[in-house]
Image (cartoon, rainbow, N blue to C red):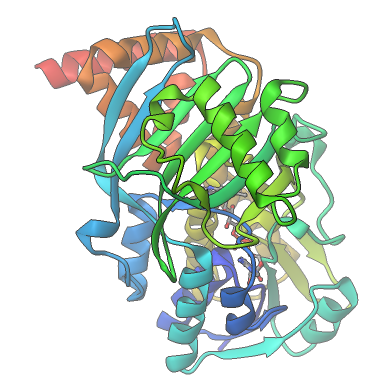
Length: 408
Ligand SMILES: Cc1cc2nc3c(=O)[nH]c(=O)nc-3n(C[C@H](O)[C@H](O)[C@H](O)COP(=O)(O)OP(=O)(O)OC[C@H]3O[C@@H](n4cnc5c(N)ncnc54)[C@H](O)[C@@H]3O)c2cc1C
């Protein structure tokens, strides 16, 4: 019976641990922070989990937030002023936004209640080497802090730095929409998106400002949201007023504020694909999954969903049996890349220079609900999304398929 070390306790690590637990494979989760520390800490990300990820949660028996009030039903995409673009695309199955400071501790508890072992570990190479001697395979899922074990793969990483300057946080004072949907404002200077997120204190709204470097949205990322929260909130409100007027209409200025001190993250994320495995000096192999392997800009909402998906793929390979040697690592690398590649390309397309096919698609979605719905639904199916947007010809073909099939 294989014995697997999983380093990290994010969605990627926990979906892998819970899945392997179901298939009877022995695992130990090595976590830098305890569940209580995660719950009491600052947010690291604000992920929306699409339908397939929630389906995996049902498979794992951890669908704790599957009630209609927590569902998000689509994407309202609004183009820059004067573009004429604006549509509400409906998902075929709902998405969900839960604060990971609630989500991860609950999944850690599920794993432990079913007999899973969680041990403390600093995610350093020497520590990973040390624990590898007790296991047949080490899976590293420590998030975007990365590990020196997995160098950047330049062939799969077109960008050398962040393409957006990010400010993300949780806010009160934004009126909910019914049915719930993600508001996604595209501007000439970046993007602003917002959606309902369930926190330990109840529902609030997450807002992410993705500033193009050098543009007016960038200033937010350098403001001190902890020491001067009123100044930060004033600037954010003004920027939303100038660049996302429809979202501004839902904000009550008197109520608007950071949900809790510290609920803001700022900085840039470099989209990167790293080498997915490493040979350890112990003779064991270490594999990377989730953000430790691939970090996408959050604009397309793929990172957590992909982390969960690759965790399930890897669980299947591990459950099929070893030896967990370099040949296994190569096989796993090929299989996981075949799953991950479309999400990476789709994420990278979003933060690259504007492409004509997205303009054409958004225009078509504005005038045809069938296109809007198919586009929104494809957030849950990155391979279908990428197939439909990767070239102008693909988009033409995809649009014809949607309009002829749905109209038939
Ligand atoms: C602003 C923003 C918005 C995003 N939106 C989306 C989205 O809509 N959809 C989507 O799929 N992806 C989204 N992402 C990306 C997604 O959150 C990551 O890809 C995903 O969470 C990575 O999971 P992981 O398990 O690989 O790593 P991580 O979750 O980073 O986990 C790595 C390690 O960090 C620890 N950790 C995690 N959270 C905390 C915390 N709060 N406090 C302390 N320790 C913690 C874990 O225990 C773990 O050991 C977003 C990211 C950002 C920054």
